[in-house]
Length: 481
Image (cartoon, rainbow, N blue to C red; front, side, top):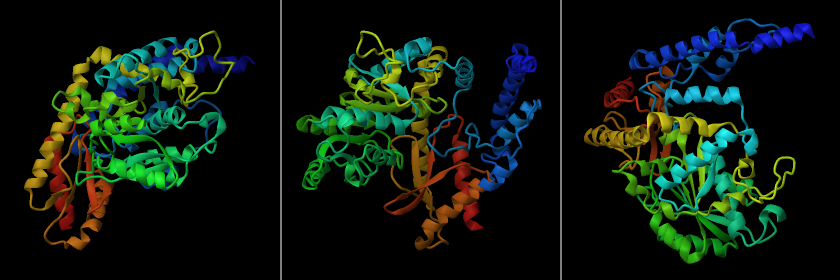
């Protein structure tokens, strides 16, 4: 027992923590400085999955080794570098460093948020952050919601409330087959997590009724009546329409006002998946693209995209705040008690997570300390940069732009004269593989009706126009080889 107490004392020793913490911050600061060098370093030091498994294979020691600094160095050197100016891949941003310090606070305090008394500060911060987000969206004062772990879980949370509100029966307690089969009207370009959510809810393949989109990959308002009629013929009850504000594939914004009108006429739930594009409300030149979002019954907004936060921080906002209690309706007397049937302060009543981290801490802190102007300007800058890049692509005779960008997502392909059009799809895949495995750039690809396209998300505020010019040059060089 004496030996155990000595080992615990060493593990929790404040002076040791101070030394390691100072050294870690210095290491991370040096890492950020190195990322600014850009082309001198690979974006992704590529290694096959099995190779990395072997690199990190270890027989975990029984006693302390003191190798924390060495392990940190290995983690940093082998990771995908989102702060590299030539990271322009998935919709996960290069977070502001202050947020990382907040994560350290959250991890050390470890205040879970199922009930208020376990996370009093983070619960208060979450409520105020949500109020700020709702106000930016011009939603009414009745709006309430929660922060949760990502857009997929956020969309599921919203749709569970929609089901309870519009199904016409108690699906939570009675099950998915306690009434007629349900479905959502969803544009074909919507994120796959919506189809996943309906399957999780037990609706099967017909749980999503696809709606046609226009040449800009935006929902066609005239497809709404057609979709409702098709679902009805198939024996499905439509309970909601989901529109995208910044779709994943191309960054398209669906026309929200016609959707809101349609939902009002047919008494349907109106949900906006604004995981990527809801942040447009912060930008004066671009907020018109989400006009009508304030009429939604529910909105999902990812802070780890447009608000420069580490993953995952997703807001789920309900126009009628009382609806937020309908996603998860069970009782847990060992946690939730008292006279108030729906205490807003017990966040676990409204989230999938029970022991939820203090995710509001980083967003609240960064908005308070860095100021909201930084985040508004970052949204505007990324959208404007995408438009400039699209103009350069359009003016080049060896590149093809898929569609004019509406946010910070640009889809394009390299079409050199020496490669026949029948081979363009295969060429894009080969070009991406070459650039990524060499570490020159990190970008992704997508499949659109006309074929395979390269796709960049200019979500990293450290990316410069010169890096995009270099991307075009690197694609040309790779194609010649």
